Image (cartoon, rainbow, N blue to C red; front, side):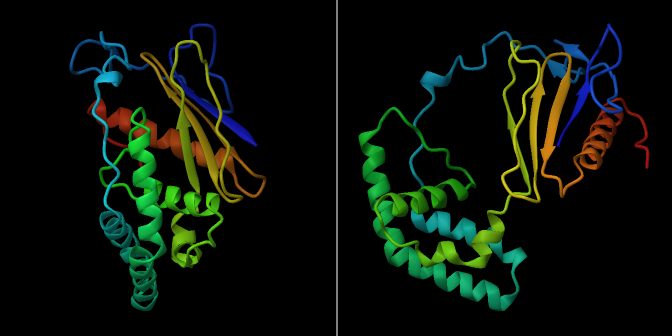
Length: 223
């Protein structure tokens, strides 16, 4: 099931989609406007960006545990913590060394670091599978499975040549949101499997956007 929301000036009639609103967006060069046109192309500085190093495995494990702690009770967290320690000092260390070696041979690629940990752990899991290594116990931990059960999965492709795109859910009870932000309109397609109500979800998205518009315009947010 796919439903659509468009917020844009639509001179030829109402916006497309069930009960889709038609609210103009403010765009221009003034700081007070919602969206501002840039004179610099989006990818202008891409080639000059520095390569970001693969983070240390201990840093990724620390970030992972920090993210898991609020989600688990003490017993579950101790189990996950022990699995992480075993992974870090065992097969994880070996896989990480292989990953670093591959990175050194591929100077045209870059790794996005920051506070993230999921891509680092994902590639280590993928590397183990590619090498024919049994799935490390860390990745069989229910806590890892729960954190990687992405109910909300989003993607965008904003281009003047693309009116609107779609993105599928990645789990049976999830939503896929394909969205686009342009100078004078915002839009999204929401997809789901039959067990989920994408229309109800889209109504919540609409309400959230309307609240943001009202806040930017100095209006009271409707309850």
